[in-house]
Length: 506
Image (cartoon, rainbow, N blue to C red; front, side, top):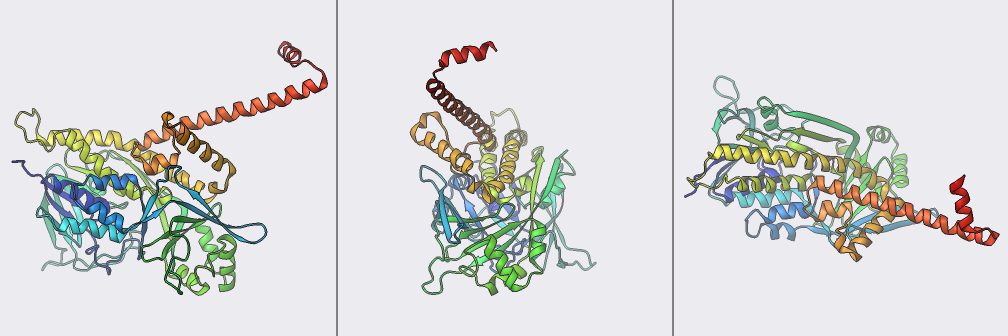
């Protein structure tokens, strides 16, 4: 009989919940600790204050749930998702007419899916709750950890924590008779920290590991808006088959469909842009929106609702985090945003976090962490440390690559989608992919969103393709110029060969 490990998962979001499922399916005793109240409770306020967060689910996340060995989980999630086949670019032509231009994501018809974060989290937690070797502990704050003795301390909170990390409120914890917060001590064999960008697990791990850490707030804030279904028939107000973009150069407005036929929208812009919008009169505010995001107001959001949503919904920062290593010896590993928070412009934050789980357990399996054979020469702890070393070595460059790609993709979404050069390269790469599949060509977006190729390898492959395209275009330009010159020389009566020899000799 396989001996059980006691796995401590900090964070009950999608990444932490999936990690708990992977561990539990391998027979481990799993305890999940979450700072907030039960995330399935609609009254539990997310840490970023937004009521509904729509996420883009793509192949990496789907593949990771596929390997969770939870029958029916993936089907249940996909049933409550909406396929998005491409982008819909919105604008106003020079004659003043509104236009919509669809851009397919993939020449082979593959698509991403819009999913509600709360729904996804609920499905994962429901599956966890059914497992006899899993316990869920909400309203518990990680206050300390000793990763040499494998002991953690949690503060039990009597009041659910509902604040954002940037604007903390004073939620009083449960007090002991002596007035100190009530703490519990938990022993473990292995801790998985999946508690987000402001990770407590990472904070305490840094006291033991020599962790290189880089954090950057980019000069872009985001604010959530909402498009209701049509009042006449409760249908989608715009196409549900697309991610809608109103590109503006240094700013943009996007809309993602929801299963209730509404759209969750986000305005991304520099802080100065929000500052300039805030004091505008209602008329000037609507006029500014109509100019920069044609067709949004009053066509999709009434002027009153637009102003109210802008005023009531917070302007939140975008954070990028890189660090390494992701583990300390055999005791702890951090996953998801705790290890590599990224800006949302590639829709890969959650997908990369879910992929972390699959890759981690692939390494644990490959290093025989779940093999109890007495013939093995090393202890389980030693094998786990070897697996974590390999995980950090592979995942660090991959996470850094998608982090950088996400930052660069903002320019593509906010401006590049309208560029003729962008469209030409996309057409070339998709044409080669369709008609010469043996070459293995694919667009960067397709490699990231529809394949499981390592992110760092995606960067290298796309760079190689770029060099080939530049070379081909360069040769084409030279060839066209040569043919033009040849024709001109022939018409002038000068021998093209004599002209070439004269040039070489000069």
